[in-house]
Length: 107
Image (tube, rainbow, N blue to C red; front, top):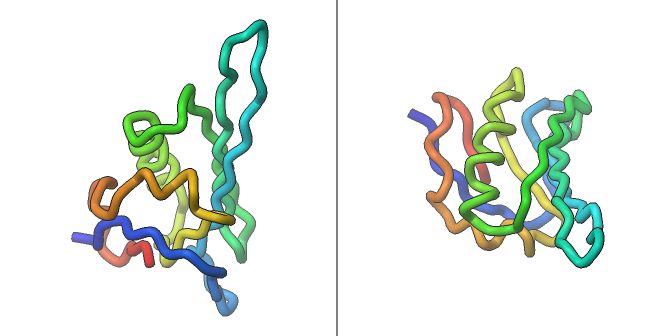
């Protein structure tokens, strides 16, 4: 069984290997006084493989299932996970994501 999710702040050092994911979140904006959705973009640093999803709110209840779904779609072992300042993803405490297949880890 793989290791559990653990947020690592700082720039990934892919050294030419796929599996280092950069993730960003963009708020679409509000419309007629209603909060808009958030788009999540996950891109591999080396292969530029990209997966995009959307959530209605930034909370662990919304983010965890979407992040799990996104990360298992990458066709290679995930070796690292990086967000620009990490503030959106700090709500996802260590261990909040399910274990990933053997060889996958989040540093």
